[in-house]
Length: 458
Image (cartoon, one colour):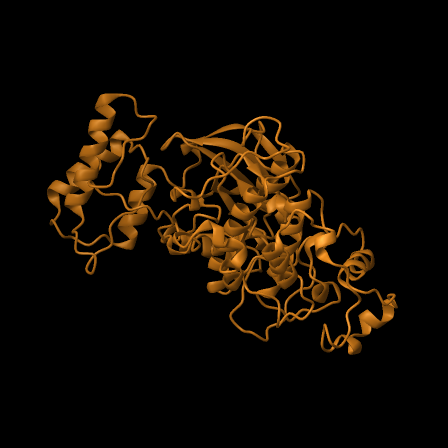
């Protein structure tokens, strides 16, 4: 292949091979926890599948300290040829033989992972400069998936944003973060297989006439902060939070998507590009050219999203950087040394010559938000980044007390709706039921699958 002969080292290819040796499927597959797929209506298929799980359990010793068991989706349908091969191997192998990385990689390939023929395309959802997103179905599970096909250039290989997204998502396993199921590499394209979700927050707001139940606002906000706190604990900045990048399924589960601009921040003083975050959700420090930032870059966007859910309209819909700053200062007040230490020496700020606006009361602009909600919104929209509330502290804000204590004790992969006391209400402005399928995937799937690979800075 030409791109292998290029003078530029094909880092993306070496990285992909590394991923092939890593098991990105986290659901433990064993006889006592295996549940038959709903799509497996044939009785013999279910019986054979249960036999296969028993064979796997026999092949891999239960001693977790000595071996690693194969991990697979719980609703998978194993191919007959793999079942036959597995049975032969289990008969000829020692009962506690460890599963090597190479064996695990070969086994996943035998099942169908990493193969394009495992997935059926059902229709195109969107297309961009570097990639196309399709709605698809997995033959292994019969579940819907989103297939993001990234075209590989012979000289450049895979876009840096795609490599970044894969490298981060393969280690992020959380109920409020979109799941990367599989990676498929061919000579011409790199296909990322994501879980499929019905909607996104932008479409959800449109579908309910921009009039959400304030109880639902609280539940969505908690899920957003929960997924974000999981990222921040691992020193990962999302850097592109907006309603289009928050996927929602028919259960009301909200998930962070589009990690193409995300960064793993390991060195606190490292500088980054300031061309991140969609303009409407970009914090003023980044708008004024700051490249030294940490987790607080995401929190300003969270505040803008809370405002948008509560009012049905974007908070700062500026068309340019100057207009965006002007909208911010007109509502929040022009910053001073008291509200933003050091702002007086910022040359870019001084060059704009903004009027001296006084801060307006947020309650006058978000009347549907209660006292605790206004307090949280204010804490998210502080100019001084050192004082801006963190995602973890925001989760424990009094605004969420009504959701109960149990919601803070959930496992990372457990949905908030696994708690009986957490239930969505009918939105006042909704046209029909609480959730109404939109007929196509969310724009966030198109954004994370297409738009995010359109030439952003590495």
